[in-house]
Amino acid sequence: MVRLATASLVGTAIEFFDFFVYGTAAALVLGPLFFPTFSPLAGTLAAFGTFAIGFVARPLGSVLFGHVGDRYGRRPVLFASLLLTGCATVAVGCVPTYETIGIAAPLLLLTLRFLQGLGLGGEWGGAVLLTAEHAPANRRALWASFPQIGPAVGFLLANGVMLALTAGLSDAEFRSWGWRVPFWAAGVLAAAGLLLRSSLAETPQFEELSASGRRASAPLAEIVRDHWRLVLLTAGALAVGYAVFYTVSTWALAYGTERLGVSSTVMLTCVMAAVAVKGAATPFVALLADRWGRRPLCLAGCAASALWMFPMVALLHTAEPILMFLGFLGSLLAFITMFAVIAAYLPELYEPRIRCTGAAVGYNLAGVLGGALTPIVATALSDGGSGPPWGVAAYLTVVALISLGCFALLPETLPDPSEAAEAAPA
Image (cartoon, rainbow, N blue to C red; front, side, top):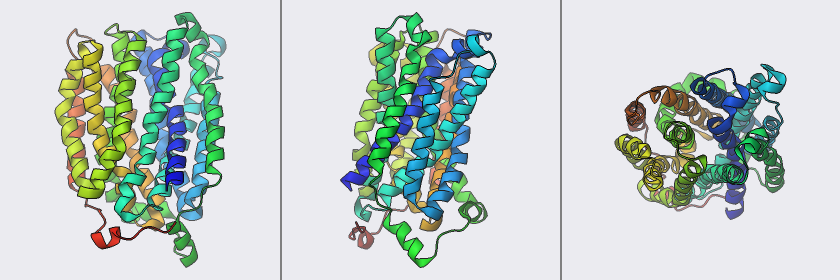
């Protein structure tokens, strides 16, 4: 289990490094480089628009790779998704700017961002099922939470590189070539991830499905016909997590640097410190889910998010590093109270034969609802005025309440004691 969990964590860290480095670049530099004819606000909105395309692609990736996972195994998904995302990310670092090739530059950026999202849409389902379907039932949430640490590690890597570059290079150097370095580094990371995953075994549950001939021939069709309500509920339930995370990690960076005049180095440091604590807390929250259940923690995380959004915006608006860090930390701890649990919760909600597609589609559709639009909506709501952007807080609070209602309609899936006493086969 340690080897499997490590491979899943490393793989998701690499894929989310690729995904997050784009979001940071969109907040800091892509607007003026690829949309120079726009006003500063419009350029930022356009850059966040290309950022959003990655989320639109993620459900499509979950359908594509989910079909592969349910028909041919979880293991092939881990290779194909990582390879696609890594290649697309390296290519982003090679795209000439608008000044060089004109309108072709943002179009290429849009295409590559779509391919990034397509690959990431497949990664989560494969990585989570690899651990969840190998894990003993009484520690399923704990072991399945390791892929959920990957996004925090990927974020810290992506922003750590960006932080070092913004601190070590002049603004002209960073805008000229420095922002491309993290995208090029993705190629090395992807190669390392593929090597690590080369020795992984297929999950016992999929092998059992194959042996019995019970694999789904058209998993998406089954989900649309028989499980559409469950997919919509899980997508709505998880939307708040995406909204909160990308408010902190993407919109807040742009707001802090452009509106509050805080240096990008300070903003990145505050966000990174909060993400590091979130990542460290993930397995401990998962242990609580193995003890008390999945649904209670998800409800608690939603409620905490609804209560914390106005304080978070107020703390951000102070432009004081310590206070901004506390605002971000409270938001991300509420977020991880839900997202440490869902790696076990979502697979348990779906039967094994359509699990890879169902869990991944619900998870990534939530990204469209909560992650794709949030930086754009928050940027628009925070335009103008000198006071705190309360409209952003109100928007996030409404999303949290909607997600709370969706979680309330989902069942509990905590294994009963007799099942929890049995370990999954190695």
